Amino acid sequence: MEIITVVPFLTMGEAKKVLIVFAHQSSGSFNAAAKSAAVEVLAAQGCTVEVSDLYAMNFKAAATAEDIKGDVKDAEHFRYQEETRLAWEEGRLAEDITAEQTKLSEADLVIFQFPMYWFSVPAIMKGWIDRVLTCGFAFTKEKRYSQGLLKEKKAMLSFTTGSLESMFSSTGMNGDMNVTLWPIQNGILHYCGFQVLPPQVFWAPSCASPEARTAMLEGWRSRLQGLLEEKPLSFISLDCFDPKSFQLTPDVQEKHASQEFGLTVGIHLGKPLPPQNQMKAGC
Amino acid sequence: MEIITVVPFLTMGEAKKVLIVFAHQSSGSFNAAAKSAAVEVLAAQGCTVEVSDLYAMNFKAAATAEDIKGDVKDAEHFRYQEETRLAWEEGRLAEDITAEQTKLSEADLVIFQFPMYWFSVPAIMKGWIDRVLTCGFAFTKEKRYSQGLLKEKKAMLSFTTGSLESMFSSTGMNGDMNVTLWPIQNGILHYCGFQVLPPQVFWAPSCASPEARTAMLEGWRSRLQGLLEEKPLSFISLDCFDPKSFQLTPDVQEKHASQEFGLTVGIHLGKPLPPQNQMKAGC
Image 1: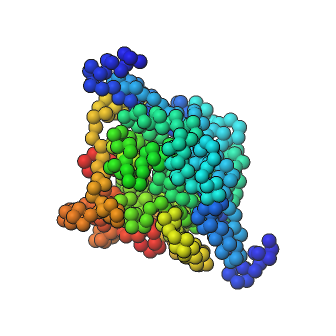
Image 2: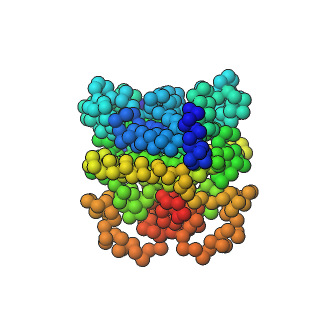
Image 3: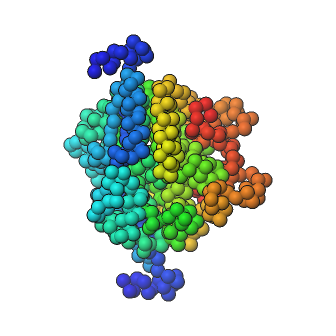
């Protein structure tokens, strides 16, 4: 352990910790191969890599009162966010949540590795999101988006699709992938403050030849070499919003009025969406 | 039972069946009140209303091999969609999935009632979506979107937010609600063919006065009176896409070239999004 952390200190400046939240049922899957590639390449760089293998852990997905040890504040009008915020403050969250929060606290980078299910993450991974990113721990009403409590950390989505890339365009049957990613990357990751690295999308590996699948994994391995130095996607700083109305301030709107595209996919000001905004840094 | 179906037959033409997929932990919640209002108003119209109360049912969220009775086809390379498609064909899906599919088969309208968690449905409801909308039962590669296997049915989202409506605009901190809804309404509901009714959004009831909450519920009760006759949201017919490339056909693109807005939120052709496309019919 000491060797792993000391060697990269000399060569890279600092050993990083990576948490991979992994959701596939099978160790023989392409997703498992992508996860293993990340473990291997990042560990070879001196990173400490931890994997939360959600199906193997039989991770509880549903947000229930059982997530709180001891009595809840108001059983009759049970409100999950409020109750878990209190439980977090008082150290009364369920052990499985606390364990994930500990891993997350220590991580510099979190990679979510999953097959896209219904244009989103699988339910078991949504359960990790719903239960682990507790109010008070990951965000508060004041500390969210660019001020989110996890703003020193990076996060990214790495996922497989069932459809080809061309189907996820603004003229394709499934529509623009940037739109599909916005609620997840902005509404979950950036909401907690994460610096969101561009997603790693493996387009329809199940339709690809063995050679093409190998090439996809090689591309991922190559990207992983420099992943920790990558620039994140662009979101809007909390400073740009009026703290009372939560609207873009008039001067920001005015400054942007002559621009061709909106600011982001969701905060588009009625303009065309900035192309590749949720897919590439600097867009 | 006979009276219930005969009376509306005389007054409304046909007794409708409604399934409410409900995800809140507490019977004292605003969501529970919204669900109860729907049950009451729709039953008074002669509808048969069934409720799947997911937390009360302790509904399994994770998509696993246990969802299949008997042996899976390929345990080493387990692929959930493929394995459950086969199991559905052979009548080997788990009982809880089959029970929901039976309810869904009989329903004319499905209402998803939930508190928005992380810009999406709660994990337990995502589990219902992942597990119940089986390939072969809800869609196939050929029969999806406007040709989806559930195209004779209607569906809608009815949900509470934690944030005010103004925050979910194209200049607000959370971004355009139309973008947030697109992956769910297009990628899940419309994908299966459902005619998607405009969502019922209860904006931040937890921040509202008791009077305002009552008014929200009254608005919902009033809408429910005519819900079954409402026009659905606009999506794009499968005919508009080339069946091989899954791209909008050149003539559709050409016809739309001079238009100010894109066709839908996701299939926007690089134009500004059609305002309220995922919130109101005819937009």
